[in-house]
Amino acid sequence: MPGPELLAQLDIDPRQLGFELGTGAVIGGIIGFAAKKIAKLIAVIVGLELALFKFLESRGVLTVNWDKLGSTFESLGSAATAETPPTWVETILSTLSVSAGFTGGFFVGFKRG
Image 1: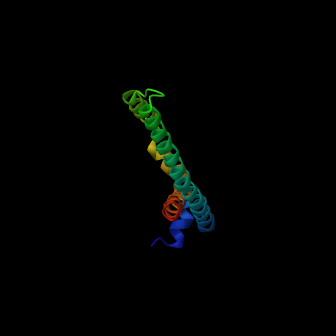
Image 2 (image 1 turned 135 degrees about the horizontal axis):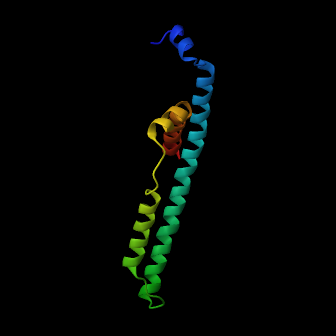
Image 3 (image 1 turned 135 degrees about the vertical axis):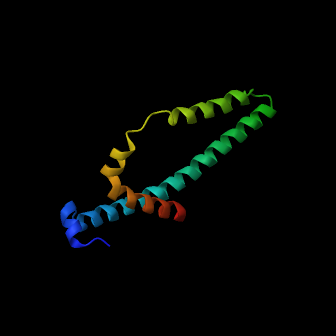
C-alpha cells in the first residue's frame, strides 16, 4: 500500500483522483444503461425491417438481393474498425482515472439496463 510520501512524490491529489473516478463511474453507468436500451431498440427495428423485406418479397412486391445486403453490413463493420487509434500509452496515461470509473459504471449500467 503506497504511503503518503509516495503520493507526495508523484504529486497526486487523492481527492481529485476520487472525484474523477466517481464522476466517470456515474457517467459510465448512465451511458451503459442508455446504450443497452438503444441497442435493444435498434435490434427490434432491424428485425422488423428484415421481416418486412421477407414478407414483401414473398408477396412479389419487391426483390431483395440478400447477398448484397449482407455484404453491405460486413463492409460497414470493417470500415468502423479500420481507423488507427492514437498510441495506447498516451491514451491510458491521459484518461486513466476517469476511464477506470467510466468502465466500471458502464458495465453496471449495461447489466442493469
